[in-house]
Image 1: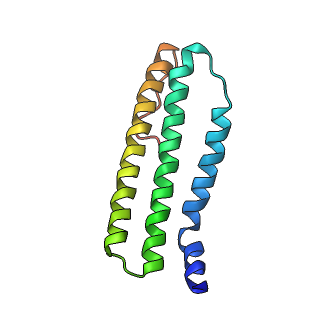
Image 2: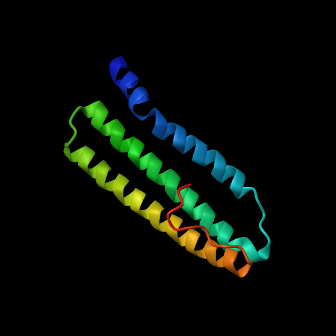
Length: 120
């Protein structure tokens, strides 16, 4: 079992770190009180961050299941894989919804929109 815990740490440490980083960011963003004109954007940003955190957690659960069971395509790991993929898709939709609204806000403020292909 110790070997399994070592594998868990080594194999998905970056996923766990990403989740912790996003949780910290969400906490900071959540403390911001936006002006009335930006409240909807703030809410959409929080939704996108939380959806991304949920996706990270689902992916970690999937990796845990595969590594601990040593059966990459067991029923449990397939269920967690599908759950993780659904969470990743939901996070992508939340991000797109936020960016679309944010770009409208930027354009109305006289600032060019963020390019669609920009990764952040």
